[in-house]
Picture 1 (cartoon, rainbow, N blue to C red):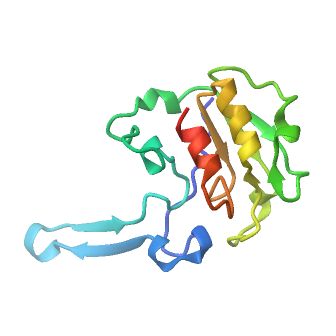
Picture 2 (picture 1 turned 30 degrees about the horizontal axis):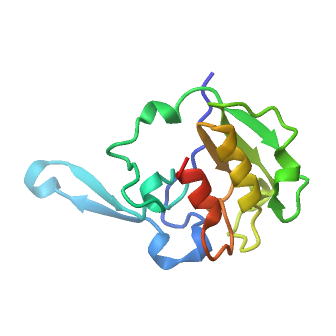
Length: 163
C-alpha cells in the first residue's frame, strides 16, 4: 500500500516562518485566443511544503536532485509516534526504537495537529541526528516544515546530510 503524505500546494498553504517568498505563486495563462487552451504556471521555493533536503543544501559538492539516486526515497518507512514530546526529539527519545541500517524513518509529533506555522515546532536535535547518522539510515522525515529549529551551526542538517 502507498500512502501519500505530501502537503497540497496552493497559494495560501502553511509555509516556513510565514515567509512571503515561500508561498507558491500560481498564475493562469490564457493561450485560448492563440492556441485554444488554458495553462497554469507555478513557481515556488524548493523548501515549500513537503520536500527533501538534498546533501548539497548543507554539504559542499553534495548530491542534489540531479545526482541523487531517487530510489533511496521510495520503499517502506517506519513511522514512530512521538506526539507526546513537547520541545524536541533527543537521543533519549529514539535510542530504544527499532531503527536499523537502511531504514527510512518518519517521526509523527504534535506538529501534525497544527494548521498554522508554529515557531516552536518539534524538531530533531543534534544528538538525535548524530545517532541516526551512525545508524546509517536511508532517510528521515518529520511532520514539520523544518527538521531543526534555532541551531546556529545547522548541526542536525550537517549530521544527516553528510551521511
